Length: 354
Image 1 (cartoon, rainbow, N blue to C red):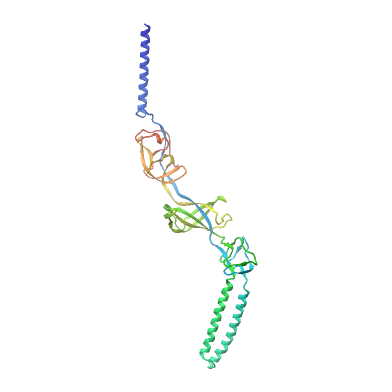
Image 2: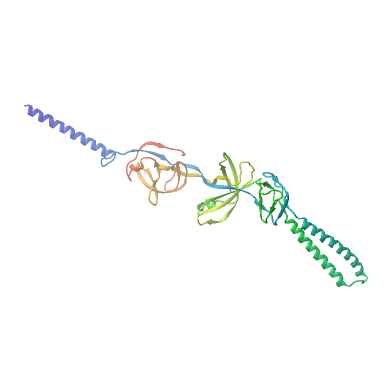
């Protein structure tokens, strides 16, 4: 009797276990097929967004005009006017080299010229009454022309003993003192134009067609990180550098500021245009492949893998140029667990601009 009861209870327990297993298996098959549960994912409903096409590159500030002041002839400095860090006007005498010998020669030639002019005046009267020949008068005129040429040559030599400011600017640090004996082509100081500076930078080759004269750029400096400066593109190199595959660009900053120091590093931002109907998706929605990029789109409740072409990349989003359109539902999480054709269950769906 006890054996019969034990056998009956054992059979009943086995039946219950089998029924529970079948129910669980059917539940899994209904949920995901082949015994796997479908994970819930986050999604984003694509909507057109405004995207500004920005490019950030590094650049350097340069003086708009800069020259290293050098003497043309050797000699002793007799006058020095190089106020370091001060503004000078164009044509200001900055350095004078000893030229007494040249000045004496010039005075001698001027005296000879004066005598020759007096002689020419008298001979012109004699020529009227045939007191001298035309040949003699012409020879005197040639001598006067020769003296004038010698005088011009001496004046040119005197001008070489002077260093004049070629443009308005700020004098840098001088390297000589009054009384120094200079060899020719000695660097005495630097002169830089102070009212505006140039900004040089390079852009990748694919953006070269978008950079035109007049394009406005913004930049910031390490010594003034909270201040934004503006510059206007002046010209480009008109040729791509083969080593870097980039185009060199020069812009002009029409503003004077103590922070705009030539040689300073600049962080340049170019605004290359904007798109009011851009398709942007979260960056984590992109599935990179060896040669392509894919996105999982929910269509008719099932996952579909779509090959896309990407464009501008932001901090947390990326532009899609082709493959999807506004209104598509893009899977943004759990993309590694989905297979083509699997049903999609949502944990969270986001809408609106990113």
